[in-house]
Image (cartoon, rainbow, N blue to C red; front, side, top):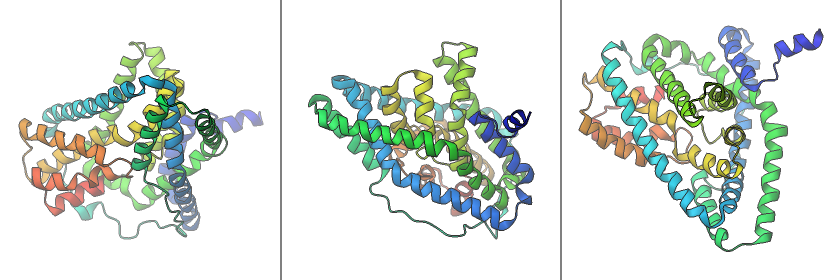
Length: 363
């Protein structure tokens, strides 16, 4: 009986744990003592610093070993992967324009920057800064170069060293990161709840926010359905496997920091270890579907609210072209998707400083 109660309170399913934490924070988060809330948030920040320090090793080990497993076919796989990512980013951004053209007249959004700012945001008890050895984008490039070189020049010692590094990282995933993942996410959710961002978003930008999340979920569900040969049973199973990745990325705002969750999920769903180890670290840096859906929506809605018009399709196509290039420039920068777009928003779409402030705050 005690075991059954324990399973109800602490389910073994990681998706259920994460969904339960979100619900608990929304309902009871404001009852926690401030010091406890700050302590949990401090733990999450420290954990993220540790993960950021390890990310270069994670990316290098998985990308390099993945490329080596394809041997001389690796350049073809990489070229195909990068081409498909660019096409996917462009297609989704154009799809968003079509959806917004239909629903934008019905979105009732009135917002100013001070409406979603907070005078006393939650602060950690202390900050831990671990210097990064090398940026994620540089490590990714280095891993691709090393992998391609040793795909043609085989080195047993090199492959053995990479294998040991990869096994050590996988041990970190299974024994340390995954068990602590709910606590890792809890701190960020408590900050969002304490700062009141969720409530203010739903009050002033609820329809746009709902549209972003709905399109993300709908597009991913459709894509999984297509990938699973239109089988609803297999699609449901794959989505359940990938759900922790989505919740983690949504909570931490970093697809790169989600790699310890997304790589095993992709490996389990595809059954292809080598491809998962190449594709996930690369796509976590450049195939940013959250940005590709969220940023155009925030951009078009903000133009409608502040400028009372949206760009013509030809202007939007130019915006999408720069946007897809910017996704490569944002590689490895947490939250960098909107930062690299600021010059484009100003010069191409005529964004004012007030509009930039709103978009960045919402992002």
